[in-house]
Amino acid sequence: MKSALQFDDWDIPTAAAFAATSPVDLTGTMAAQQPAPVLPPIDAEQKRVVNGQADINQLAPFKYPWAWSFFLNANRNHWTPLEISMAQDVHDYPYKLTPAERHVFENVLAYLTTSDILAMRNIGLAVMEKMSAPELQIYQARQVYEEALHTWAYQHCIETLGLDQREIYNRYRVVPEIHGKIALANRRLHGVLQSGRPLTDRDALHEFAMAYLFFAAVFEGCWFYNGFSPMFALQRRGLMKGAAEQLQYIMRDEVLHCAFGIRVVRQLLEEENLQLDPQALRRMWDEAEAAEAAYAGYILREPILGYNAGLHIEQFRYVANRRARQLGMAEPFSGAANVLPWLDEQANLRKEKNFFETRVTEYQTGGALVWE
View 1 (cartoon, helix red, strand yellow):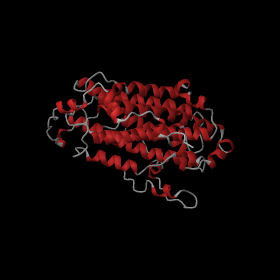
View 2 (cartoon, rainbow, N blue to C red; view 1 turned 90 degrees about the horizontal axis):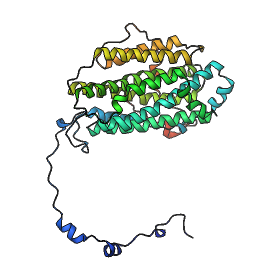
View 3 (tube, one colour; view 1 turned 30 degrees about the vertical axis):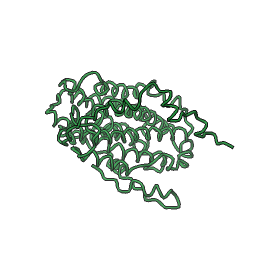
């Protein structure tokens, strides 16, 4: 009996049959071909973040060895949502969470599901094609995969808990405070998504740098980083531990995304001798803060035990100051306090678990992650 698919089911012509029916004189064509011209070797110093003239297909020698280190480091945090038990969450969600806590949980998921798809498209369809060094593109290819993995994690939580998928996924369209953040991101990232304007134009280059800075420092570095904290507030009380553990792995990825993006922006500004408009930077931070404050006011319209909207927005300001310092820029929110000192601990997840309670591979992956 034949299997469902066998090669002898296909009508593949033999080489003799192909030669007999082909109108092309293969022998003559081969003889007429000229050897390809010899190309000069590539010097690593010819590489640039954008507008480079080096061979985009030649990985090494590296000009940006730190980018290759990011790629290797990211692979040490490999995981999938199916490795993490959601059994406790299935019980916690209907029986232990208050209505206010379910409101927080659902709306954070609703925002994150849309945001990670936006991040995936932004990197995969816009940023990568503008990078002119392959070591930069290779890390960003891994980043695209990770954004897809994060989307799977949110979907796994939604599906496991039996939430209404149509309703959750549509919240960013119908809830003004969630829509506001997505709309601002789309507008700010327009400069990255444009493909018609060459980055040799200084105005276009400035717009690209501002858009990529927003993506790395605000969208991923503040909104994502600070955005997980309401879930971690539940986890600290022993609630929704499976969903929170998935967010811890996601947070490790996002810390690398942010650090990589900030490193690229700094390299870009140096290579292109580009100065960003201080007023444009001030508007960016003010818009980001206003959108985050509106969002926090909605998801935390009723405070939950140990967490409220005031803590959320103050921590946003504190993290924003950190991102600005990493960029070598002035702090936008002078005096902001670190009101959630436990937040950074979430990125330092350790996977050493009892072998009888989890998979051996889960113990092994991610054990040597190094932070930039």
